Length: 330
Ligand code: HEC
Ligand code: HEC
Image (cartoon, rainbow, N blue to C red; front, side, top):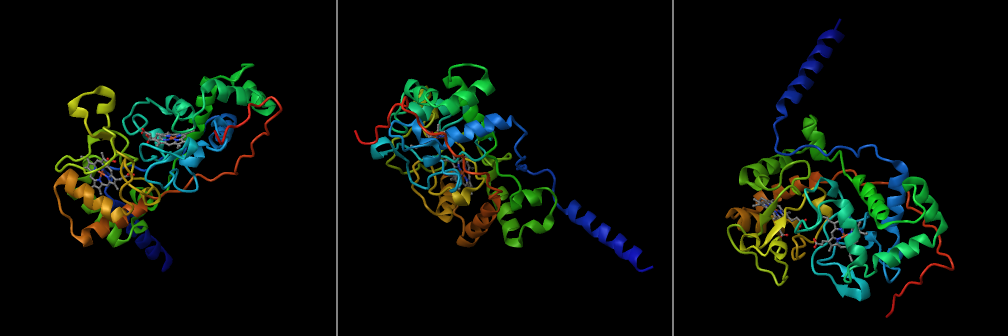
């Protein structure tokens, strides 16, 4: 007889907790990866990890977008072919399918278009598309995989970038503690983290960092209230349009997994989240936050780390006598 009221009380309690979670938030949970073509994804994964797409035979997509390190390289700017200093910080590939466009200045419309860039970029993988395709075409296992998926005898750049993009679509990070909270688990966040989220909203960060990725959906000026000091020559969208109004406009980076993707900003100049939050509050919003407020916002930002993609490391098919040789030391 005691069981029934207890049960009813429990139900009422969980109902109240649910009701206490506001459902009209400016941030939405990350959806799990859509079921895509598993054979394509597997092929794209191999290509993502294959350093033979570079001139040196040493640099793969994973070199600069290390999936063991939040999909980034944790360097201020990347190291490219011949140890060249890269021009800009490497953004994470995690959740990049949610971006309105790719690159800091948005010059690639989507992941497929983006994937052709680094292979032929002299400062990244420094190859030519023709040579990269020669390498792949010289490897029977790759030819067979491409033939069975794309129904063509020759491997094309279009198929290569399509497979890589399909793999990247799976690199989402659902089920962070913040998403658990958004989905109704009121206990998923501590009081401090929740206060951090309220501050993040009330200070005005959500004006630019919103949506499921908390960013990636608009281009905004870096230095709205106060100019950003940097030696990095990148001009943002103005580099494409030449328009003065686009100077220092960059794609707003996602804040998902941000605790893993240091150092911060397009020049990678700030290593600590505390510093990055302070810079943002001052330069974008004209607010000088107290250390205690910054600590709360950082505590919130760390709840945005989701489940990292996990899979078996792909084993790559070996080169053959016909495979063009790598040129690591020229
Ligand atoms: C040498 C380091 C390096 C290599 C190798 C490299 N990338 Fe990148 N990647 C970068 C940098 C740096 C940027 C930012 C460039 C910019 O915005 O101008 C970038 C940008 C991107 C973006 C856009 C993300 C965003 O938020 O805008 C994606 C996606 C991406 N790379 C995927 C790849 C893939 C796929 C490969 C392999 C074919 C690859 N990268 C190889 C350094 C690298
Ligand atoms: C006016 C739009 C805007 C507002 C408001 C804004 N940000 Fe940003 N945020 C950006 C842009 C643009 C960048 C990239 C700037 C760059 O790299 O030069 C950025 C970068 C960041 C980064 C670094 C991410 C990375 O991977 O490099 C963090 C962290 C961040 N913002 C947090 C915040 C916080 C916290 C607030 C509120 C105090 C805030 N932002 C307010 C537009 C904004």
